[in-house]
Every structure is written in C-alpha cells, then in structure tokens.
Length: 102
Image (cartoon, rainbow, N blue to C red; front, side, top):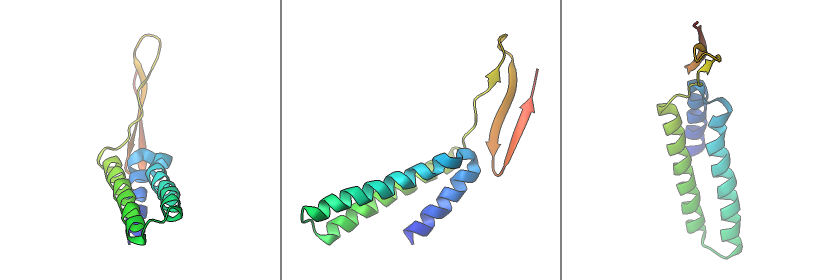
C-alpha cells in the first residue's frame, strides 16, 4: 500500500515540474533500505527491526515527495549580456509555459 502511495506521489511531483528528480527519493529509499536491511539481516537483527527500518525509510521518502509537490520546480531566468531577461520557463502542472520578453 505504501508503494502505491509513493508511485502516486512520484507522478504528482513529476507533473509539478520535477521530472526525473521525482524518482530520486524513491531510488535512494529503496536502495538504502535494501542495503541496510541486508546488513541488519546478516548481523542477526530481528525481522521486526528490519521492517521498522524499512518503514522509516518509506516515510522519509513520502515526506520528500510531499515537499516536492508542495514546492513546484521552476527554471531560472536566462538573461543576455545587458542583464535583460530573454525568457522565463516555469513548469506548471502538465504544461510548460514559455514567456519571451525583451
């Protein structure tokens, strides 16, 4: 059930302009959980403590994704040599708007 929630949050973060960066929290959480869980298992830790560690990693991942959704990503302004903005690209929902000013 947590995996389904994480996938939905990844999709929402992707649509808020984070694109491939939205996959990073889940990748770190899954990889880190696997690595630490394997080490804990090899050292003889109980299954309950391994499960608890995995749940904590999932909750951190969900928190990071909610933070990404709460703050949409916008791309910095590009300016010419005179300091005037040439264009401003801002990611909004599924559409990308480009405003060209002189």
